[in-house]
Length: 228
Length: 50
Image (cartoon, rainbow over all chains, first blue to last red; front, top):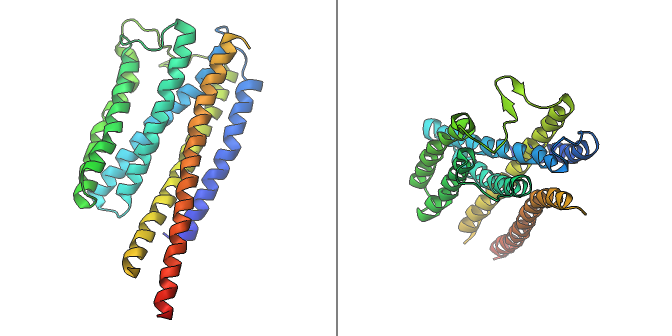
């Protein structure tokens, strides 16, 4: 894939994020109605899309890991690493925004009895440990294979985390979506969709940006070795 | 500002704080890459002249 095509992808992803993120903020504060729960409900419009984007990052990282193992495609290992890196960042944002919301709504920063919260934390810590694995092994095919297998193991936790709320008998963490569809007004659902699109666009932009940086780094290292 | 507004503002600031710190780190990395390109260009020039 040519460098100029890759650069266009970076610019396109950045443009999409630059349009959607401000649009999402505008829609949250000027279009979405204030819920009966109060202004604090506005945190939902970023907290849930960020959590879903974190799942998407880990899923994408696992997919790239599979591509590496299955097809041996060069660059798939790097793509997997970048996706998981961003997943951890989005995961951290999920945990912090969720804690802020929980503290205000229910007076707790965290509840160990809430399965969905604990399973998300487990998923986050699992993928945080990915970096310990990656940097404890010398760069090369063995590291790439180990990391790919690790990323695939983690993906099993995603549906479990997602479905955890269904397994709980009692819960505080609200269910916004169930088998009957979204449990919110049309305007709220539209706002949620815009915010989700914005977060996914932000992930795409950061992903392309970081990937471009890492590829440049690798090429410079190669050039340095040739010139030395 | 009410307590509720502070929590909402805090949550949004966390998100944008993360994104801005990320961009700062990437900007520093870009500066390092530019420096490396400069050094490698110098090396290549010396090679050609030498």
